[in-house]
Length: 231
Image 1 (spheres, helix red, strand yellow):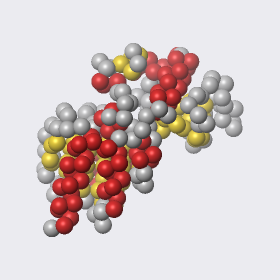
Image 2 (cartoon, rainbow, N blue to C red):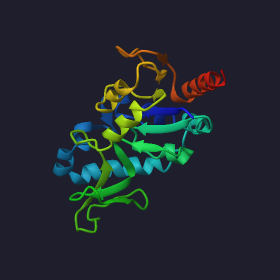
Image 3 (cartoon, helix red, strand yellow):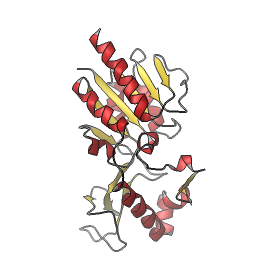
Image 4 (tube, rainbow, N blue to C red):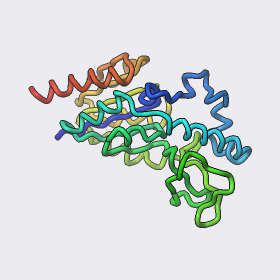
């Protein structure tokens, strides 16, 4: 069974109703990213940062996986599908995808401020200032903020380098290190890039650009892949 590696970005979840800061003039809910998604922001105003993620988490409980998520689940019947997502939501898992690697953390989880190995599932959508880990430290969102290291980039790089087919969905290809993953794939394998603003990536061979949203774009690629597999 061929290994299909899928790299997903914010556009994957947009059809479920989850807004992205890049679609709102660099703002998330009228906040600059520097004010709500950096270690410096957390240190300066933890109440604001915490409220921001509480609201995002609350929204996540109100949305559902879309057709694009479900189409990726269907592909597991014909391919070894490994999803690498830049998204912090759990829509891939809720749709039924069995292998999901989160590059930038997970919104429904929190972790210790002094020991990043202490990660907990949050009960409900609200984290409160004063909620502490077993070592007595304040809990924070389990999110990789701008300026922080991306611990899962190495396993993601390994998965990408081993892929037989690469599918990129709903990402601007400008956020690093995630955007650099595409350069680890072998030249000869087929690559598909789905996004309304998708473009030809310099130096990338065998790349098929599909300027569509996730739902219709994934369905189209799924048909192409199955046709290829039947030949």
